[in-house]
Image (tube, rainbow, N blue to C red; front, side, top):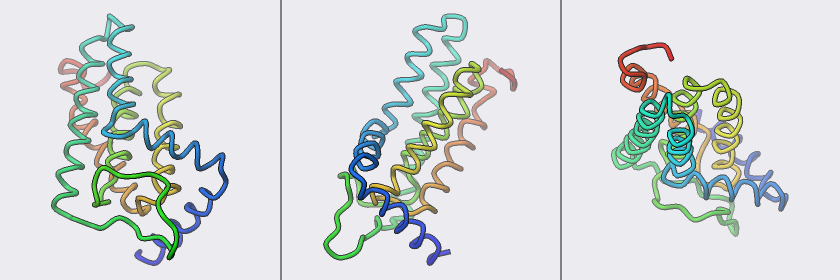
Length: 173
């Protein structure tokens, strides 16, 4: 697993040598910091979808809760961020020095599950953006693939566990 993690990370980091890819990866990383993009999406959904306002707000709360859970888990696991080859630096700065699990992946997956259940457009638009954000964290060189996979699993499980509360006690949206 360790060897595969490093080989995949190296291949994805190589993608960041293309300036267009690096710019997109930086933008995705920046917008996902502290779950900002996903929480803002939930608040926007609440503002425009009066019929499901409470569910959107609860979905945003679940996304924030998943993000906080990942931050707590990072403090327990304390896995250092990847070190690139000598002379290379990550393409972005990070808020912390621990990488497992990826908080960006956690909030992205939580938003995918939560918002995807609320509107068909969310089910079509959020997953590709969330996947791109997850990949961006490896392209910029701050997470191993296993960090991203664990974060995505944590986020999806958190949102799924809270889906009944989000939908007012109903399991299906």
